[in-house]
Length: 191
Ligand code: GRF
Image (cartoon, rainbow, N blue to C red; front, side):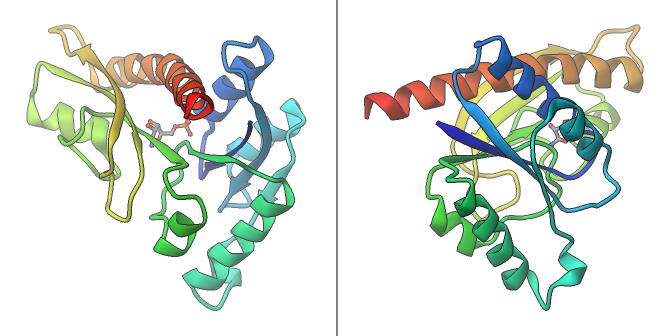
């Protein structure tokens, strides 16, 4: 299967997924990166990893609908089967959801339905909970809603700081995402 990764920023999950395809823990091909910020670090990673990048900035389009139409055109040109959101900081509209029904996955750095939104790690930290985690889910038109595919907990211990918690979460993310995508693709094959 052919995957597209959509990301807005750093791209550690993008890179981990590409590596997972290279060592065959993830049996799929990442055919392109879609990025909405021309200066995002993830684009450097894509160059290094020799993955083509589709860079489209919403401000260059009349509205969100035209922006997403351009993305879908790009995805169709690469014959993409499944879309992997990895730190893509925008809501996907029904237009794109309809083009890839049940085939858009997202990763969130908290145990949904707790702490949705842009700052899942910070919000769990501020709330003083003793456990948070990572969620991989299918997306729908809400914010961090949609059926959950996998979750893994991360303990917040006495000696954690926000920074050590972030590092722990990102470590868990990178393993959980590849594993869950692999299971998702396997289940699709057996359908
Ligand atoms: C991750 O924490 C992911 O869960 C969230 O955005 C962050 C992206 O990190 N949706 P990176 O760009 O993959 O390094």
